[in-house]
Length: 93
Figure 1 (tube, rainbow, N blue to C red):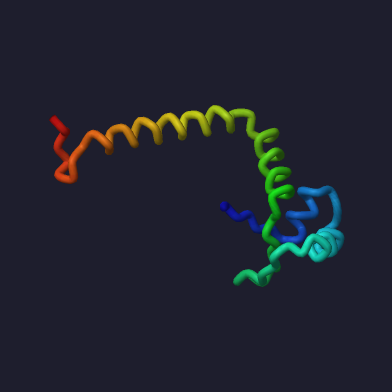
Figure 2: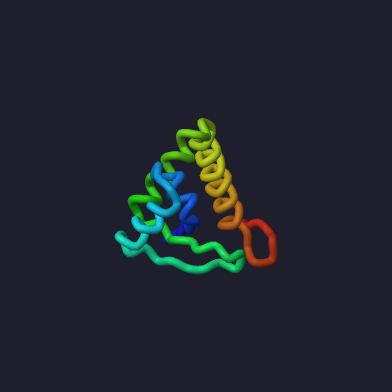
């Protein structure tokens, strides 16, 4: 499962409130928290917050769905190439 970690400021921006309110919300939701090397505390988003974050990206990046489709198509094509080759790099007869 992918993880998304945000500072209290970033979480507040995502949810529409201050960093202090985001801190209280993180405590209330029992989100995992860690102090990063840069000195900022970050919280790991739960599934609901992750969905909200991804939706904001989708709204901001209108081409995102097309980019995802292109990546999936490229992955499918590359997977097919690897399946038809032997470990010596020669095609299967």
